[in-house]
Amino acid sequence: MKEGAKMIKELHRSLMENFEQLVSWRRYLHRHPELSFQEENTPKFIAEKLSSFGIEVKTGIGGNGVIGMIKGEKEGKTIAFRADFDALPIHEENDSPYRSSVKGVMHACGHDGHTAALLGVAKVLSEIDRSRLKGNIVFIFQHAEEKPPGGAKFMIEDGCLDDVDLVFGAHVSTDIPYGKIGLREGPVMAAVDAFTIQIKGKGGHGARPHETVDALVIGSQIVNYLQQIVSRRVNPIDSAVVTVGVFQAGTAFNVIAENARIEGTVRTFNPNVRKQIEEEIRAIVQGLCQASHASYEIDYLNGYPPVINPRNETEQLRAIISETYASDCFYNYQPSMGAEDFAYYLKHKPGVYFHVGARGDDPKTHYPHHHPRFDFDERALLVSGKIFLSIVNHYLLQ
Image (cartoon, rainbow, N blue to C red):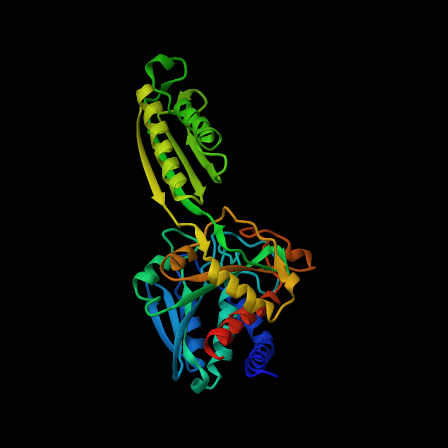
């Protein structure tokens, strides 16, 4: 047996031997979720575990982020792995023994699993002979993925990618069956922007509309026109979604509304389309409000850029995975209009973002992400971990 093949078998076996520990960590984190930018105990938990493995640890990176590092004794690449650890403002409806203990806060996107899996990888790699390691390994535990502007941007500004050559991230997915892996080059997840439109009219009695400027009617026209941006202004070859999620106006049935509030999101892949839609929204609001004698304010937040996997690194990862899993393990993963601030890492360094199937036979693993009954097949922790270990073996141990 070749030395590389022998090493990866040992690494994978070590991870599997720690499976119960990974599950225990994941369930602890699930019971104690923390919202984006409010993470206090989770980074402490992570730092304590890394320190107990004998890994060099830095805390407070870009806010609440944590970094662990293993330095090899030989020259080589520096490979980074990222796991996010924030939760969502969702009240959990599961009745499992590890359900959230925090009212209104839940790990409904699998970040508890991402963190547990990467801790398992760190533990396994902490036990290898450093004299065999041709390079360095960086473990990036990131806060605040769920809430723009996100934690990635701040961690990068604080140096988490300094001297890193390649960066990898994984996300468990209940859209994909357990045992399958979602990997594709090019666009993986969309850019997402958010907007808030405040309309100021002139309120009055429902019997005297001629003396008012009806913010509700103006807002209704704006919502209608916003829905025509994608269908009539954007090239149909390009993917785009404009969603209005909030429309608030009026206080009583016989009072004409003085104020209206509209909130929504814009999701795109093409940067030119992204810019075009923002310009269209601003033009629509300006035109309709001026024509109706109303004033307005627009708060437009440019959020995460799209996640784009580069070809060479993606194909290399496909080859690495194929050494462990059968060729039919790859799932026909299509680009998602969801967003991920892992995009910032890929704007700075080459790397790959992939999805790991986490929908098992148990119906409780069939709920979508961000659902109050979300859960996943915990065997997916091993799949993520094995792929990370295979990456280390390929780049740093052969």
